[in-house]
Length: 414
Image 1 (spheres, helix red, strand yellow):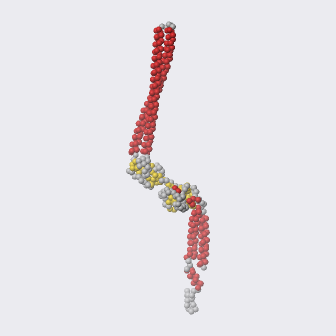
Image 2 (spheres, one colour):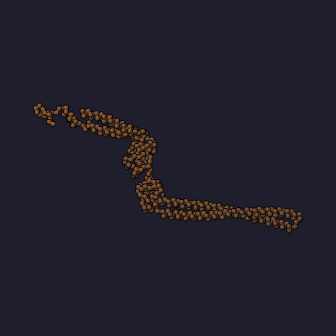
């Protein structure tokens, strides 16, 4: 198409309004373009959703990055001294309760156990011998008592005969004085009385001797009883020695007291171990989190509240737990050198209080989690705002901003 001509034949100049419109259209800011407004509105909506979520979470949760995993660490040490014969585990190996860890050479303990068993057999034999002697002494006492009773009965009979003979002698004296009996008869009565008296004396002496024998037998029985008690005590002591030797023998095999993972193994075959020497440690599978919260954060934290736990070594995964307990005092108060605020210049410092947080379910993170690893617990201390409401509010705000932005862009375009 031919360009417009001026009356003199030269090309005509464009109008001033059209030139200004084209210039503004060509040099309009990229922020005022409608695609930019649409994309910016979407970006603002996303930022609002994220920001409102962070604000809502800060209102309903208390978090801290000063938190670490903790757990019971069981130190393994031998109860007896001896040379290591075999080691059954390696570093970081998982073991169950009762699994063998280390075997100490049992030869010395087998010998000691055999010696104690032999001593027990000898003590039992000695006890049996003394028990038989004790039974024999019982029989001897019973026999001595029977003999003593028999002698006493005989002495009683002889005493009766002696009394009768004495009475007969008195009557014979009366009769001889009255010349009623002959001297021969009197002499016979006198001899009979003398014989009965002598027999009684012999019977009394025998009865006393037999009674003394009973005392002697009873004394021997008492000594036998003491010997039996001593033998029984020695046999019991020998039995205890056998049990102790068997117990020491059982200590030659060191087994896992709990299930967990072996750490810090410091024992090899051939090592000579002392009693109480630490040779390894076992970290049980039950772990928990100790979160050191600021004392100003404890206003709403209560036992039993749900907790969301993240562990640095397990990125992107969250674990559920709950507040198990809160320490009665700050961590500084239980340190090696607690602060002495009563002297010098005092500067108030917000203290941190350990909060124990336990996992609701056994931790299965796919790899090892152990004491000392960093964690970040977030305690839910209030009701959470529904995500749908936050999304609606964020979108409404973003649309409002986008609407005014759109209007501004439209006015600029005209």
